[in-house]
Image 1 (cartoon, helix red, strand yellow):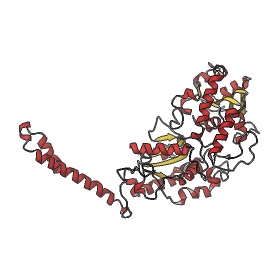
Image 2 (spheres, one colour):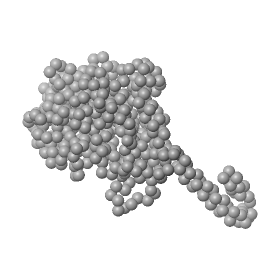
Image 3 (cartoon, rainbow, N blue to C red):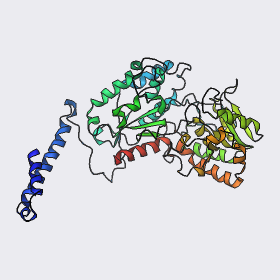
Image 4 (cartoon, rainbow, N blue to C red):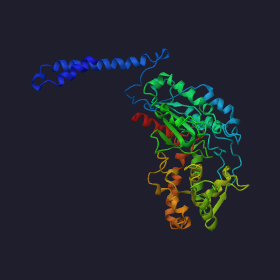
Length: 459
């Protein structure tokens, strides 16, 4: 092949009047070169491993008669230690809370049987914000275009519960312990013929934690988090998280935090939308959260103070005894009674509360673009003024802006239009009950799969 290429170079350097005599030779050389490349490409897949004899490249032409054409997903059948064993050891997932109730019911958590007048009668659970990996995996099991033939797949899903595993070891000083399962996973993937086709670029993985817990730069025991997102192999994959780092990485994509609402049929979605559309909202704005007195740069204190001073604001201080902000009844009652819901950054820019408030038909007020606008591009309108209000956090921090005055300027007509937009978005950021199929409702899972398949196709 090298000789052929050198011969082509010499031909191209000849005087123009001499070249016409050698055109047939040039075409023959090009034909031999292409034939050799095709042979080497085919051979590289045959020689991957002894187990790859039945493995072939995906079909080039889509079948228009196949409704799943272009949408097939292969799910790796990983050893139990990467997922189900983590659930069996659920007492160890977080050091300060027993996560066993929350990983039950396919990750939805305990079902709410007493919903009162705040919630509708069905579809509600006490769902923990860190369990998205379990919910997503169970939704994937019901995906209509699964394939057991990896060579047919348009994308390949790796169901490693990396967020739950990382949560078990975040406070362990030994990074080798923190990364043990992750290192084993990468070794396993690289040994598989599916990985070798395009170096994992058609693979995707999901974490129920924020990017900041998974991007440790060095194997230093004093540094925070795991190193999933800094591994070269993972940088080839598509990574879904509840909060991404869009300015650091092109392969991270944020998908919604899980809320407490997991409908099992279309009528439950419509019923809930009608309820929040017609509810009475006596408060102009509200805030559910705790102060951050020791956190440099946080505006939580200023937001809480402004809410306390206003007769138009309702505050639910999550740090006070008796105010259990993890219970859907508490927060949803607050959000349903308010036109605007304040969403200042907490430990990280995003908050689950943003989705809880929108679920209640409350217009979110953001103070940092990274709380939503740079994050959930698959789910929220690019024109953020359609569904939210933005107040720069620097203006709140230095006291140059009154949140009440900003919000009071919105007319009833404007508020109604924005609320209707929020309500129309509800199906896009809920996660349906994995044990049922909702044909006419496309939820956060459906939109994520569509976007992943489109991204892999572009690669």
